Length: 425
Image 1 (cartoon, rainbow, N blue to C red):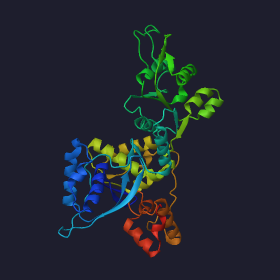
Image 2 (cartoon, helix red, strand yellow):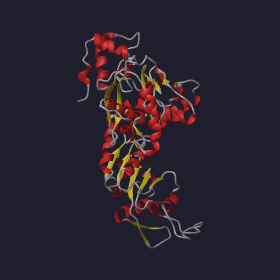
Image 3 (tube, helix red, strand yellow):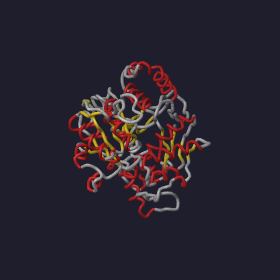
Image 4 (tube, helix red, strand yellow):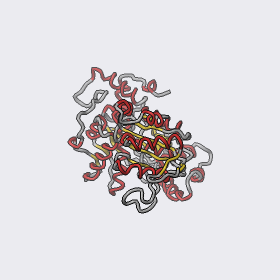
């Protein structure tokens, strides 16, 4: 799928396609390139599909020179430049956009993005995941706190055991204790038999307590006992039940303020806050917006049986600089709505769909016709700084400035800007 953001076209390659192309780059540089080298790294059930993809690449792709993203297991994206020279016996043809496989983006347990604030969070996830420490995840509504919790679980020694999620705000206060700790038969009206709670269901695994600030006082005391002694009593019972559960809690509220006003126990806060992880708001990681647009567009279009090839420049700019008070959840909903009403291969949104109070302002001046050149060089250098010297692609300077990559290359040459000095070391 080819997507145009900020006027700059780029190919959207799936994880499978990136892997195949990377392996082909290596194979073509060796004396005896073989398909077996590639297929040896592929799961047996996926080999037929990858074989077909390799056949297509080798049959249809001609001269190929592009910067692409290589996703490492830790969720860190490395930008690589690779080239496959043109074969002399091949006639020019239209460029190929690979659109055969799965999600077209770099992901870390469905956490999409490569911005510095997000990389910091993911680095914390990697450090705390192998431990049994209690984690407190904070952040605004819609930032993906549960995804962070799942990432911690799947990278922990408990990954093969259950991950049980509870939204403490969605359960009536009178039922929370029974929901978490279970109850004995006859404990209250309607308790016709013994019932296990979420702690028992999560034994050996991870319990995720979302909106933990909403716990009533009596349930906070019971939770504190579990964290301290690894045991609890079912509602209506007297025998202790021992469990081995890792607790990850999350909230969008200021727990320091809740402790100060007496609505949240200080001792429970300190038990939960062993390893704090603060998830940044989307407006604090704007460079991830183009990647998120790709991801949600591809996912919604696939589910709805549509093919979206590009995004209008106006839509891309609007989505990039909107403040996103609802964060990633709001962006996902806006994209899904746009895909539903889209009747062509080009995605566009109505600005009225964005209900937030304010729009951000792009930090770099547009170079569209009519705007000019007094600070043109400064604007280009600022864009190159943000993009670490990249011109094209979803993170390139051309996209930030809203001009075609070829136009920006000409400007860079005319202004004698050395883009190499902006590359990350």
